[in-house]
Image 1 (spheres, rainbow, N blue to C red):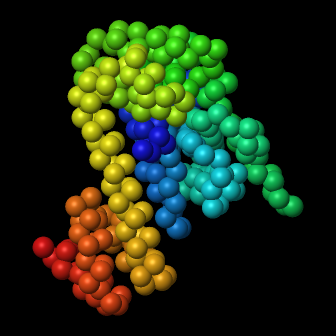
Image 2: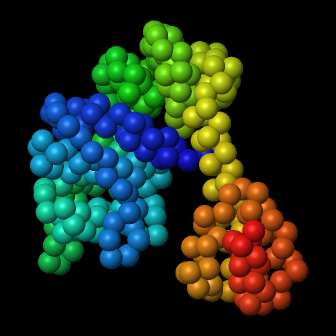
Length: 274
């Protein structure tokens, strides 16, 4: 399950609420930007352009602290590309979702011999729950906030979800909340306070589950391709990345009948022509 994707959905669905929280401003208009930046394809979790303040809010949601390219360097890279492309100031915030003692979660700059680049870091486990409990857009993050009593916090979260009058919104917020709560609490404890039936009725919840399964299938297929053929051209990988779950399963089965890259390309051509 991609917890980062749930947060990205929230930031794109409720950009004004995230801007109020992170920038302490009241934007009159706001635009959610594409998350692919120029030069080489590089994706950020959430890019929010505040037109009235002439500023970009770049939010990165992180479940883990370690990555192939260090987070601090990525923030510098994103900032340079954004400023080059949009020519406005950029405010960057990394939101760490899962509690950790790793120093990366407590680092707010990239530093090398010639450059120092600063950004903000928020650790959800240090945040006061009040502002999250009182705002449906931020409510799914509430289970990750500071607490001395998990049961009391989840009870407050459940009460806040129940107060949402619109049925579809209530279902979706319950689904987001239940998923993110899984980063911190056992499933049985979550089920005591958040109705699994309500979450499963949510179309968004089903979509997230399906995307999570598809992402797992993609990783598995790419691993099989690497094991069978070694390094593969990026153009082939791009063709595989757009496959749905059924196509990825079919590719996994077909790989056992392939003996060369040429066989793979022929198979891909056939799939795209159907």
